[in-house]
Image (cartoon, rainbow, N blue to C red; front, side, top):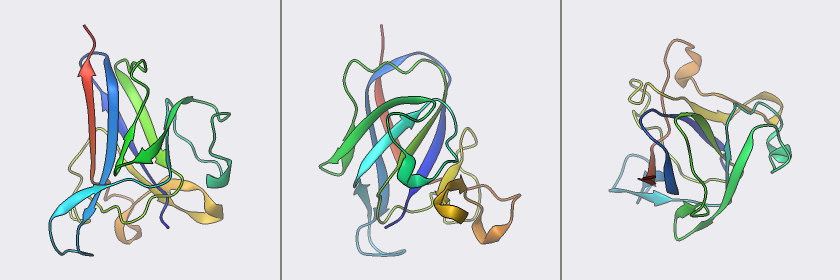
Length: 147
């Protein structure tokens, strides 16, 4: 199991009907088409979380919402509205997610990927331990603009 996270920045307007999914290769590493993947629970926070992964729960500072995986997607309550700002999505049990850029470059400059680090905590993921290289998880975030 992999624990993975991704920070995102919402710039333009408020959104509801939030849906999130990680992406993975259908047939293993670097093979086949990319498909949706969601397992475990996804926690949405309004601040970075660097605590122990087992402690990730609705009681952590910055908790906004949580969604369980269903049909390879996390679907948040329709009434949840995300205002412009920075948010963090953390999975407590995600398998087979992939790096969007395959470690070559940062494709989404408004966020960072998080992975399992020392002491079972989330840390910003740097490929090959090079702290100047930032990458992102391959993910899809969808929502509906609030009128």
